[in-house]
Length: 123
Image 1: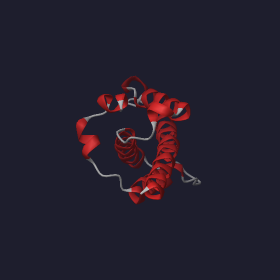
Image 2 (image 1 turned 180 degrees about the horizontal axis):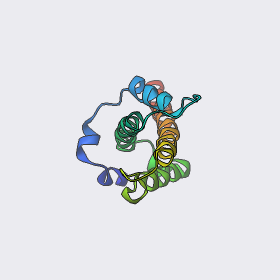
Image 3 (image 1 turned 180 degrees about the vertical axis):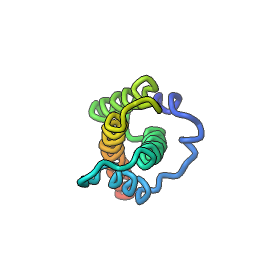
Image 4 (image 1 turned 60 degrees about the horizontal axis):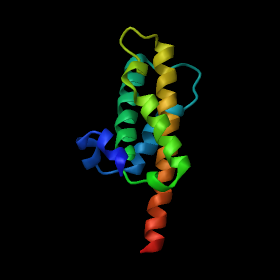
């Protein structure tokens, strides 16, 4: 698959632990009365970016599915370094980015689950 070359080799070697992915996504998307502290936002974002990269390194049917191709384009757009918050970014900007990565990671995890279920059904 052509998309793997764009992902780091270390992400390609990490196993996908869907429980960890779900936990990070739940943290990112939880609705509370107050915004999380910036260190929590930054740590959750780092976890989500790692999960997203690992999921993008998997064979999710990129070559044959236009919807998956669109998902990968969105993944590359979100992971673009110029879009990521910096230490100078506002807490709200970092929070919004964390939620965007969380939503996208959830979509990739759903495709990964479907792929795994299909592989098991085919076996």
